[in-house]
Image (cartoon, rainbow, N blue to C red; front, top):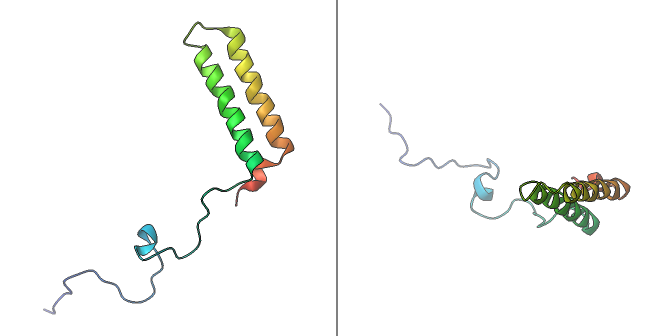
Length: 89
């Protein structure tokens, strides 16, 4: 029977895997993708969902729920006008 290597070291170029192979990044990573308007629109939509979500368990306070829903719709319209879905790359 032949001897097996003691460790699982693979030689050659196998590509970067597992936190870029612990040796550094094989390609540049940007910290945040997207334009500032995209982040602002996402924040507006999150605020709308939060307002609507808070309105239900405290009452329900329907006018506050619908105000939050309106904020979400306004954010979606602004997002569509700003083409925020084109930021994905």
